Length: 145
Image 1 (spheres, rainbow, N blue to C red):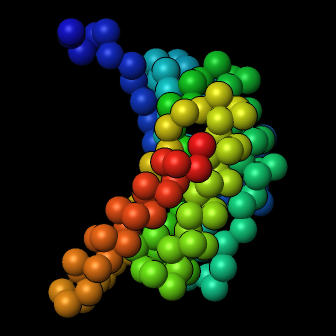
Image 2 (image 1 turned 180 degrees about the vertical axis):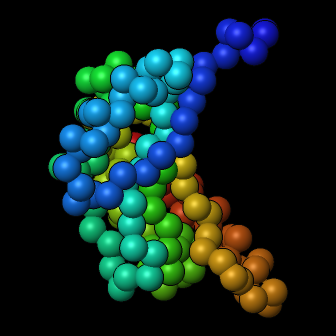
């Protein structure tokens, strides 16, 4: 396989509250640059106390890329302290949010997500338990489809 046969991808994030007009205006430039696919995300505030699935905004974001002829290769889901799938007290909130993302992505024809397995820093004495909790959370997500 040669590089000329590879798909060219781009990773980008858009504010959930922003009008997608600016993205629609940019898509021809992506296409002219021969961008075939994107990893996309909705920008988030990282230090909030809770996260909400902005499913309508996510559908609009994915749809805008698709309508412009750019494949959405994957969606990057948010990560943060209050949805850290490696931290026992927050793991379920993270699983619930990621499950919602997976459902929206599946309905929009996107079959890949990018997920943070933990939120750093992690104290050395917590690392083994956090890795185990993260693995358990991913298993639950895998079984949720």
